[in-house]
Length: 301
Ligand SMILES: [Zn+2]
Figure 1 (cartoon, rainbow, N blue to C red):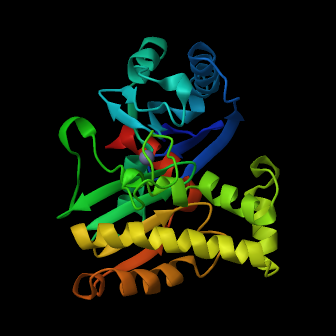
Figure 2: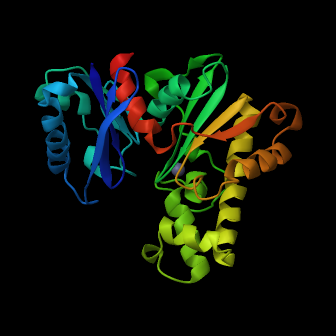
């Protein structure tokens, strides 16, 4: 059976999934890298992950899809300064094509997430959907009137850089007050560490989750603070585009089982009632695999 490889590039690791043409996860793994990794080292790491996979005949790999947390134009990574400095302006598609004699696809991670959820999730029949990925950064993808939306040169969906506070918290993009500066995972942990009066590097999501489930006051305050800001962003999106569904993937949404229940309530109270009454906010059906499966899916489209 033919398979493809889906690579998800994150700020500290490269994850991969080998997916069969029926959408089955055949194998998976990940490699960590350091934040000061050079472009050459990064590309060599990527090559070292792919080479043994492509040399395994049983997999019958027909293509490789790579999802990056940045804009992508014709296979070149744009705007990676904030998340993956090693990939700034790198023509990733050309590099991989020169190394491997099979089709290569490079796409924005949230677009890959949207492709996956649209095919394997439960939104195929819904015409207007916003996909939101909340991780180290905050990205978005739009399905409008049944079609995944792509603006000129594939530059759209940067929901994280919607400004929600004039002169607010500094964002990695250089602006102040962006949604991402309040609702990303680093912003979340930074807020939690301030509540605990400890250094931000000394807290992580596992520690947070334990405290939250134990009813710790600082943890509950942090989650409420996060949801308040996310409500502003999602309400603005809802008022502008009026989607019937907003699908969220995030490690934060897995910590609180009522994450989307709370958002459904708060957004319905914040956005224009006539628009928000048609909205449902849900978690991604494919969970954490949605981005890498979406990347693998690119080879079968
Ligand atoms: Zn920004």
